[in-house]
Image (cartoon, rainbow, N blue to C red; front, side, top):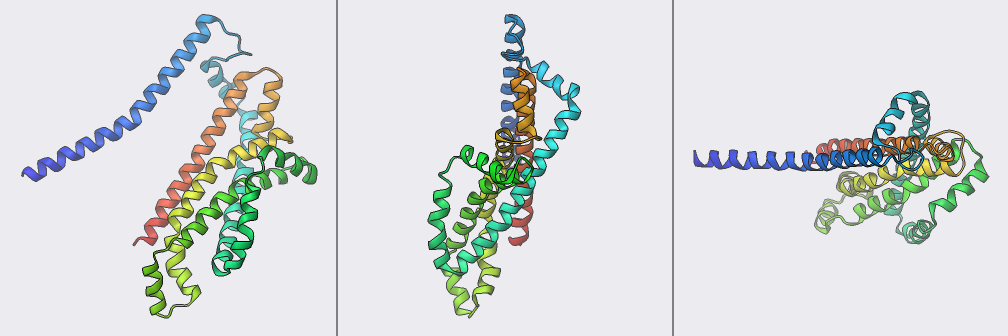
Length: 264
């Protein structure tokens, strides 16, 4: 009976802590919004300097069609570029694992390319491929590719040697070892890279649109900024954050599903 009481007490404390982890940030966020609204209203700050939260929210109702149209373009670019980055990362990671000399040759070059600022790559892609969707997709792919690849390769290389020796004693070939040992055990780090890249995908698409495009949230933000419609700039920024959170959430759900499958 005593053990049951202790268990129930621990469970209640854990549930209470979880609620606190959710409630506290929400309470702080709501307080910031209320203070922000009060400052703008009381000090009569013009909308072109700092819009009130109520004005920002109203944009989602008054300019819904236009905002959603641009959001769809950005989402499509981000999803497409992200998917291409995942496929290329897996393929190159597999080649690097099977052929070590490829890793030694390519890894330093890939590391060097990551030191090039994104803002210098996007205009080049626009010059080479035009103002359409292709340069935006390529921008997302280039941005997301490296974190995924490095996490995947790192996961493949950091397999417990005891497991590798066990597969050797069982006379397993490279393909069987990769399929039944290395690939499943690299999933944890692989999804860590996916999470990092998921936060970059929408941002990369937006930056590419900002620097040269005709559609998308980046273009919507640029036009709104030039018109001093900061309420629309804030609204599109909030939408970008929401899309990024959705991306990360989807990756998290897929991660749980995949790891549950391999851990059976």
